[in-house]
Length: 124
Image 1 (cartoon, rainbow, N blue to C red):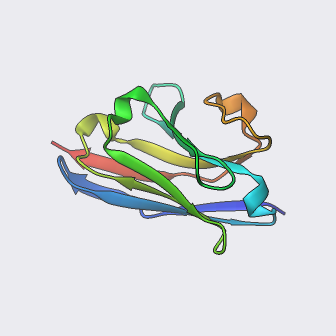
Image 2 (cartoon, rainbow, N blue to C red):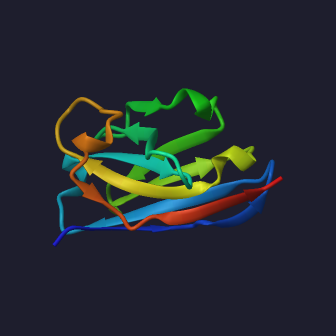
Image 3 (cartoon, rainbow, N blue to C red):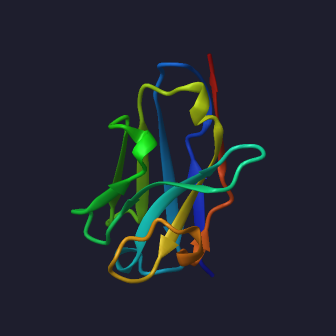
C-alpha cells in the first residue's frame, strides 16, 4: 500500500519560511518523479514544483519566483519543499504527489499517488 505523508505545515507570517516534508512508503521511491501541488479555497489544484528521480532536474511554477526549493533524499524516501519569503497568496493545502515516467509533468492528472495534504497559512 502506497502512502505519502506530508508534514511541516502550519501558520507563519508574511516573509517567513516553512519546510515541508513528504515521507513515502510502499513504492520504489527512486523510480518516481515527485511533486508538490497546492489548492486554495475555491480554487483548482495547481502545480508548485517537481523533481525528477535522480534529483538533478527540477521544475517550478512561475509564481514561485525563486522563493521555493524542491529536493529529495532517495535514501530516506523523502521529498522536501523549502519555502521562503512566504506571501498570503501562498495560503493553501499543499499536497505531495508521485508520477511514473521520466518526463516531469505539471498536470495533476498525470500523478498517480497523493498525500492527504498539509495546511499552510500565511498571515499578512
